[in-house]
Image 1 (cartoon, rainbow, N blue to C red):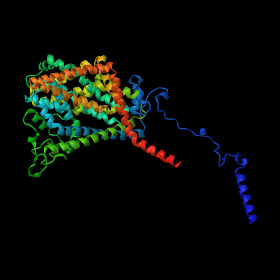
Image 2: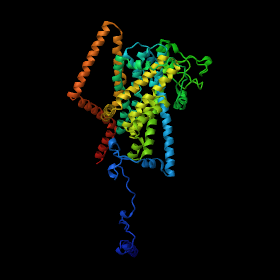
Image 3: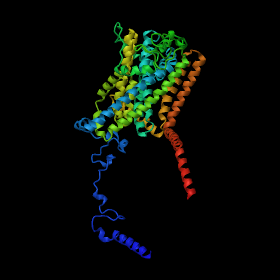
Image 4: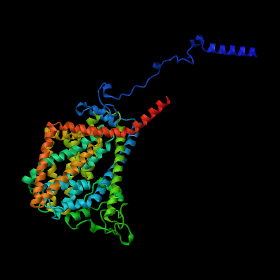
Length: 589
């Protein structure tokens, strides 16, 4: 046994000596305990993917770069049209396949994004239709007319609907042309709330939110600046009234309603879900009905739910073209039932908008990944007046400036379209939306209705002539939009504050003050005068505080503190989990 152990040990020693013998490694075979004879440098390496413009010889920025949002518009170098053509049209078969898949995905998400906007508008009309109709029926002065236009458009989520109702009111002699002009101005402001809401869909990315909110509010700034000039000018001189009156023909022939191609594509599915009854709003506004109670409960003869049998309907109606009733229509429904259905549909519309917005942004970012901003800027940097024509044409097709600007807002957020290009597209959309009012006036066969629609057109043209051709005036609008965009950097929820103040608080405040003056009683007049004086003093002190008492710095600090608290609360659960794990590790140690 001792001899066997000796032999075994000798064999183990021999094997170890062979394995570790230096002579064994004269060949290219490596030791088991050492690194291979070849080095990592001998392995061909893939070139590192450049992710910064600082690492490129050309200094150009590409989509997907870590410093993509650091580049300013004036830093983008010019590209040739040959480069644009190559980037656009020269691809391998595999690349063309992926482009086709991406384009199909973009069309899919774009369709449902537009459907979401359609449902948003219909739901808003169902929820706020009765209130909007009662607002239209009030007597008003220029200020209250402006505020009614803003509030009604915000409630109805469509300036096209508001202007069509105003034109109908003028055609029925329920509202004078002078009064309608101020309401049209308000509708121009109210329509901008939709793309501002869409911009909030990019809250998750600070860079995209800043650009998107600037692209959305450039419309707000332009419309507010235009109203600040032309409302007092119109009240003093009535230049829009006299200009359009001189252009009127003797008679207006009755025309047919025109439906844009996009409406033909989107409306059938939207009408299957919910369809707002615009006649309710118009009848309340014209005084044919006192309130919404006259339209309820809805009733369908023989219990058959279709357009033919459901003659008494409320805020939700059936579709005449298909003969069917939407999913949210209910036989025997009361006003509260329809408003609840409108609220549910509004929530679904917002969910669809957010999902489609995220899908659109993700797909477009994937498709543009690696694309140079020089090429994108060259392709989109068209003559601004041609851009206006494009914006006008798109809006005429979709019959809504809200849809045009809302579809462009996320693209601005991605950096594909610069703010300087967004402004003329927006101005073109402002002109295009007047086409709806002109068509409505032709259908009404009223000279006064046509005059109001022409006032809408020339009001927008006048604003463009003042604020766009002169660079100094144009930069006021662009600078204002950029300042609002930068405010979202300080506080992500600033868009909510902007919407709440500019589209609800300010119009309601001025509408209340105007109503006090219209009572024509000394007590109310004195009270309104005191409120106006106090408001004037407050505004003057606010300007003084902002400029000379570090008001701007105080506001910035306040918003930063709110943003910091929000971020701390969001990260608190993760921080607590980390602290627990660290305490557990220390205990075990």
